Image (cartoon, helix red, strand yellow):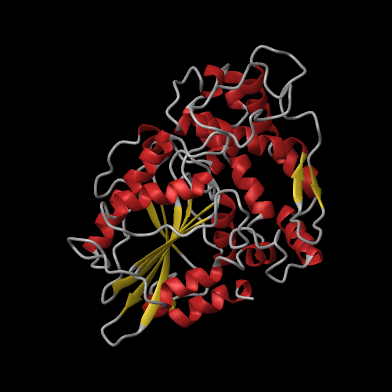
Length: 412
């Protein structure tokens, strides 16, 4: 890849992605005077291959796409190993906080795990549980594999008070002046870089940029749909990221034409799709109609730990509903990392007052790639500032009542 094409990124890439080797932020200890007594995680599944046997339309890339060790869309063995590292780290932290017992298995009913019915979400929850509490009989609740579950796709299942007109208006506001064409123009340098990776020395006939970007309108049971260059760029950039995260040799990551810096910059396309189509409040609230009651129950019910094993769209929905933001090293701002989770912690003061804060917890992209054991301070985690919450003078800390109000639009 010539320097001329990397220089096209300019400030765009710097603004949209962190260095792949940035340190994890500190400061995730509970605020003074508060202790954690409930934890809820909404987590994306781990590393998977593309979801289709032919990853993208013919002609998108000049070379054949790399092979994978599992069927399309399944959690890979490497992905399961990386998830297990997170489960071990989460378990150790929860024991340090006193949420789980220091030794032995949690009490019956203390840990609730709910997974979507895709193989990758079921297997992700299994790998996390096996490492969180080895040898403990904790069930992973899910529908039979591949049977649609409305918990994870409320809009498609006709739930959540979804109004296509409100969805279109929310997406239009996210797109902003000039429409989707203006958005594409602002990303032209990244599109050029992606086409160079996809096409290599080929001069024409491949890449993602030929078809202008578009947004198809919402309909009953269907969200607005991104099309054209930005849609294909989102898919292609995510495939490159997953190739890197899987630990493939660099000769197989973007056919040897993509660097970690490129992958971090290009993941902005995936994050952009979520910013436009998943984070707008009406869409986010409607699509969380099945998950939001589980989150509320996790903060108020018997279980002290609740895991919801879902998808990047679900995580982006909650990020949009709460209006919170994160940036994992090696991945663009607000792009949900494989195995990354929005973590909701319920905290209690000495008088029994209850509060909620949100964190984002994920391995860096290089940590996913290596799947090496994680030290006590290893994963990226950031306390997320929830707008409008300033309980006890702590920015982003909500009272439990305030947080439940934040979930209300999704609690139909």
